[in-house]
Image 1 (cartoon, rainbow, N blue to C red):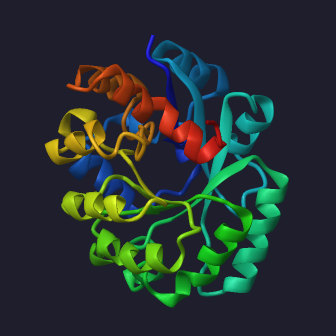
Image 2: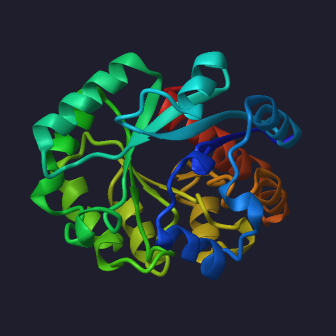
Length: 273
């Protein structure tokens, strides 16, 4: 059976007060049904993972969380789950960094996340100095940083998520482990060129149906980017079953597919060699 690490899974959707733009994304972009905002119980999620060969999953949570499904699932099954933490107020950097440091010290966090289109009214691209304290802290903690790239599904400003803004970031912070998440549409070629240029940059195919990934990315995966692309479903936005079924149908060698679905994430987030 195919083995996989799902690098982005949401288990708290049903517990959130969803903003209107999330409803828009469900209906207009993903054509999602009632399962889009469901939150699974632990046995259900484990059964889903086992049925699809997902050995580990990284669960999204916020830095201020004290009780959540994600925290509970990680506590009960640390062998199967780890955390990605977001929700930083980068306009108050010292408070934000103290909160991040404390959260990382208390929980099994393998990365932190930020979406440039989703905070600060979309005014701050990743090259803005407002991010620099976070970049420094991630380098100090040896903590990977995952940043949304590409035009977002919600009606939010898109320009801050053009991956060209990462050019200066990678140049100034070569120690930063950086991953573009949710692909890079329509700037796939820019993202690929940046990964060729910078060894510390990765891309995650979260929230992308594998059958719709562009041929330019698949070519990069088969050639110079065998160790650069990471798999994620963004469950329940897309199901593990659908994503892994479509991944199995792509014209990729077993070596490339295993790296994408498992090995690259194992190395990037968990330090496996």
